[in-house]
Image (cartoon, rainbow over all chains, first blue to last red):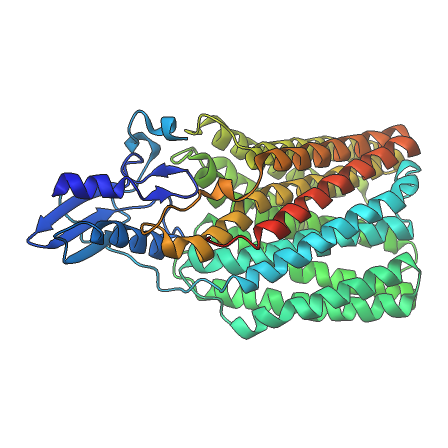
Length: 94
Length: 423
């Protein structure tokens, strides 16, 4: 299930950077318990205006998976994201 | 990987798209009008007549119309995010533009056609709109819990906006009821610098400190130059106002030196952000922003020369004012290509993200046309500045034509962008 959630989150693109949130290193954790999925993630800039939009997008992407009854999008600002958290091939998507 | 306890959703609500959007729409109208004003004022600019009615009218179309209206819209969007506080008086925010914009049109009409009654009436409306905006900004800042560099930059900027309005109104009243005599020129120079450096540059330093690392992905860069920039620009502006009547020219060089050092510190900060960027390719808007910073650097260099040789060389003085006003204008134009598509995406495409494929922000407009607009605007500014230095009316006209073409392309692109919706 974690793999399926991770794959679904690769469909959620940071609209400014143009790269998905997994490749950007914004997803800090995925927890699956029965039908409940908790996605702990951050954004590139503290106080980003997209916080509500991206939380909704994370929920929508994971809810679309079979067997998911409930999604907790858990937006955190610590540890603070930095570009070193990106996967090596992040810019190939662009 | 486990969930982290520090879940933080901001408490402040962002404004509806209409609030920043109406300011950006008005700002673009003033940009095109300012470009048309440049065409009309080109012979005066080449002649070094920086106090001619056409030049002063056009200057205000840029400073109060394009730059200040854009800042107002951008701050209504940014403040709730940066301070985690909603705008203190949302109703005042909705009304100020409709006082400010007609006031500016009346004011510029009065300046250009030498109708002092229009000038004073327009200046009074402008003063009401701008002071209401400044009061709202100060009240919003006062409610913030965290006071970081952006907070301080905006707090100083708001103070200098009030000062700009007061000096400006006194100058407008002097046109109707002359009382300043020869002191008018010194007051005019003080007004220009309190406005462009104390108000506009401090906003730019405070906002760029947030936006440039976000756009360039240069998180963790050394930010000490920005702190120096805010301190030097704020102190220099205060001294400029306090000492502008000092009888000794060398005393007036002290604030000039501080302002110059502040500008250099800001440019250094911007260079650090660009150099530390993780993005392999700098996109069109950020290339235009870099060009704008180059023009602002050229203005600082011209300012340094003028502080030594004095304002006896009208060509240099005109080139300095043109480079400063249009350099800042380019910087604002660059950020429209970042902020407007972002807002359209957030309000129109964000709600369906994760459910359906959505375009990226940069895909909402044509990069090719943006490149054309950036090239035309930048070339226009460079040729205009060189035309003013060389005293060439032809070069000034060509530069103005290029600028107005670039401004029109950008305005048309933004208008098309504002209509984008999911299919």
